[in-house]
Image (cartoon, rainbow, N blue to C red):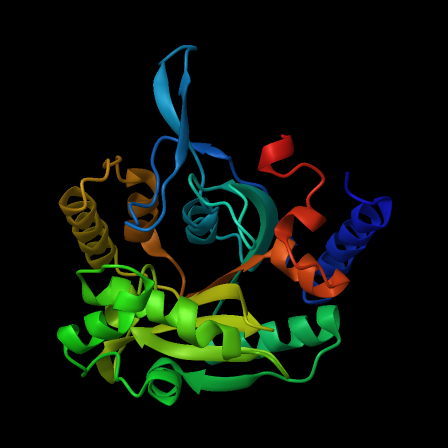
Length: 307
């Protein structure tokens, strides 16, 4: 059973987060957990349920509040944040629980570097840590593997990644190598921000205008833990639909189920999403860092095996 002091520390953490955003006039919002659609990312599996009331339909438990929050941004909400539960099937382990707590926030008129600076201030406030260092994805990849993520051959990446399992495509190789061989070294003395991810891993981030091989996406690491994932957000509805459709094709190639696209979100993009940057940060992992926990179960009142 979780200790009462952990419950109190989580409550204090959420209070501190709300104070951080209140002083910056960022509005707290709520969005639905259930949706008729979900993001079709090949690496994320949703939970779903069936609604039996008027207009019976299948509904998905959100894997992130991102799409709904962007609909609020398109409607003129201004800067917003949310503390919410999110759900991802099949994710359980030292750092994962299929139901987990997420902080997500969006800043209109922020570029990627503006948001990185605010995230740095957030971590210094909540973790009492030194200022973060910034490194590029390609530089850190070469530093720890002597491979270039964009220019090394697929065969070379496959040979390197074979120690972690059999893989076929470039992005899976890169993700395995990053998680197994690089992440444990990051953020050991101060938070590490990794920028300029490959464009093939852009998700909902813009590609860099000066180098379309790279995306304006960044991740934040503390003590070897991936803590947050941020984007300078893609606002082009045509490109976003194309990316979603490409993800559906990838899911089909992997024999994974496909799901309906979020047409309401795409319509919001067409109406006009303001220029903005956004980030999602894992609150259970943040709490683990604060209390010195070694397993996510230590900071959850009821982990999946006790739910």
